[in-house]
Amino acid sequence: MKPIRIALTKGRLEKTTVELLEKIGYNCDEIKNKGRRLILSVGDGKFEVVLAKAADVITYVEHGVCDLGVVGKDTILENGTSFYELLDLGFGKCRFALATKKGHDFYSGYNTKTIATKYPNVTRAFFDDKNMDVRIIKIEGSVELAPLVGLSDGIVDIVETGSTLKANGLEVIEWVTDISARLIANTASLKLRKKEIEELQRKLEAVTQ
Amino acid sequence: MKRYTKITPEGTKDFLFAECSAMDDVCGKVEKVFRTRGFKKVITPAIEFYDVFALPCSGIMQEAMFKTVDNKGRLLVVRPDSTLPIARMVSSRLKNSLLPVRLYYKQAVYRNNPTLTGRSNENMQMGVELLGVKGIRADLEILTTAVDSLAAVADDFRIELGHAEVFDALSENLDIDEAYKEKIRVSIEGKNYSALNNLLDKLEPSNAVSAIRSLPSLFGGEEIFEKALKICEGTKAVSALEYLHKIYTSLTVLGLGEKIIVDLGLVQRNDYYTGIVFSGYVSGIGDAVLSGGRYDELLGEFDLPMGAAGFAVDTDAVTMLRLSDNNISYSDNPEVLVFAHDGCEMEAITEVAELNMNGIKAQFSVLPTLEETKKFASERGIAQVKEVKKV
Image 1 (cartoon, rainbow over the protein chains, first blue to last red):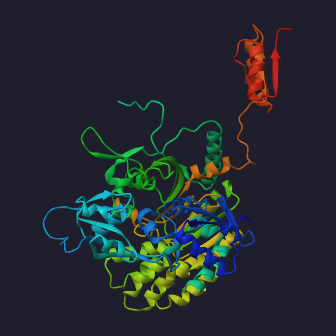
Image 2: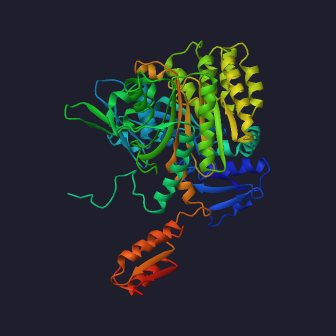
Image 3: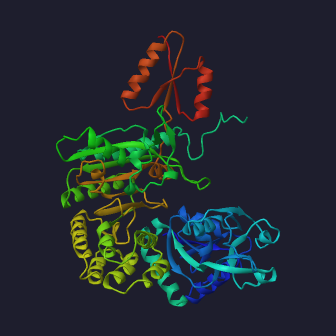
């Protein structure tokens, strides 16, 4: 039987996921000493792990070349379409927020508001729910800069501690949604390899609750 | 101005040689199943009026449809689905037909998918529709046809089976609006447990709410029914569950064992499907390759209410899977290349026909010299060159 292939988001989520996998008894030495290898065996060859950028984790799982994935809810909200979201892994917690310059009344006036963000789809959905037309500008780097230099009225971004906002004279005026790491599964894989995937899901659930 | 003379539009492609042979093979095998079961072929136009697909229950987003206008300014779409045009056709051309009507189709559907996702915008589909009858016999006929179709083209497959009324019955008495209900449905469809729990935690606790909470996890074999009946006790979902159990038990006769999965979280297109719903999965393809169900409300939208059920197979996906299988060869190389010396062309052509009749793949060489013919044969990997000359 082919090993179950799991796509892991590189970086911060990777470390905690590896800790979880070790906690449920899977050997993760190959990931820890990966060198330049991209496909790594985990837990006596029952599983295989590939490391990828967050949005690519979703792509690999959607196309079924990876059976499972560990990825942040932020990436799912921005890029996700069709897969199963099996489990809230409970780590990598942060929130999406709408922020503006401190003291600025965002909703005042009749002008169409401009929002700078790295997450245009999340932003669009948030304002769609309010039946509010906004102009969205996609920014690749530090979004906090946009309202400061007058490019936008506000930003929609991930907020963990809020210290970057504070340091730049911005404040949260509304929370958009909570974010944490999720276990996702390809729809066909869950049907074709039900037992193995459910077993892993149960074990992970037990150590994350 | 840049001229796009040498590429195809995004999401489309040319099919060459082995790809065509593989597609013909797959379609031929599925078609044989359909025809044996007594389904008759229909073809609908590639373009239709937008109105045909704009029904609230159709579930096709308007941004996914390729649109154009006719010479009167009426909105047209390139067919994104074949069932709705067939419903249109049945409600007019087959209005007085003897029921049931068994139809099948083999035609491409077109969807304007987001770019750079690797999805095709043009997809060959084959499907059947069984119209004019409701009830378990019709459902069994459709389901076993689906099983036979998949079995004809793939060894390792699963059919998952659900019932639209389970969710409908559980959710109908909840004090929520349509938008909230849709959010619940989407989180069940995506087996998104945490989102589902968040949504349900805001509702008054009841049997129905706790039953809905467990819907996405209710998938597996026969044991699911016992669990589900206990959870749904006292709700209207019970009769749908009992019906589904009867279907499941009947299908066990086929000896498919674990190939048939019950999934009560199968709630896709719930405005469209009214009874059984099912999807087919094949090892090696990340998405469902077959999907269908019972849609008894649809024909009513075309003013001819009647029971209807059907399914469609994504034959492109199956074709790609078979092409990547090293155990299946779609080589169309001839075994013999027949070269005619001057004046013997017609004899050589007759010889080719005879060889082919005897089961040897032969081809007439149209190159002018024996030398060029031999060179071509060796480069193409054709084993034998046969000469025809005057005796």
